[in-house]
Length: 160
Image (cartoon, rainbow, N blue to C red; front, side):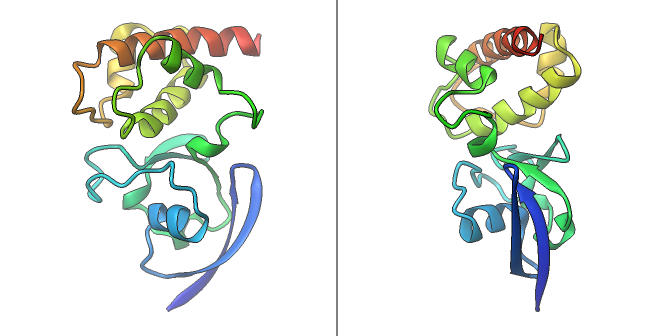
């Protein structure tokens, strides 16, 4: 059964008819072409599909698209307010070698941004806690943690 939904995705109003059983990650990728949101496990364990829903990080594979009617969603594609520049957290990942293979990166960055918006000067332990739901199979997380700490500082400086 198809249901009509209206959502704001990356600050753009979108009206769609989606299957009532379609996940948010499938809606983003298949209906809107936003493939920066990756599919890893489809069980909510890896965090590759993390997006911001009402500014909070959520696993898009575990949420039905029909359940986000009327909500605001930010994906990695819409994170920067300037389409020709990186968001400060993205920039920090580039500068501090936090990218690794890149598969987990969009979800990690969105989780990090949500944490840094609420905690502009996190400790390493707070960063580790915020990223606990995001798995990276490439690394021991050292460069990711370093990138998030730098990104949080850059976000704080940019805002003010």
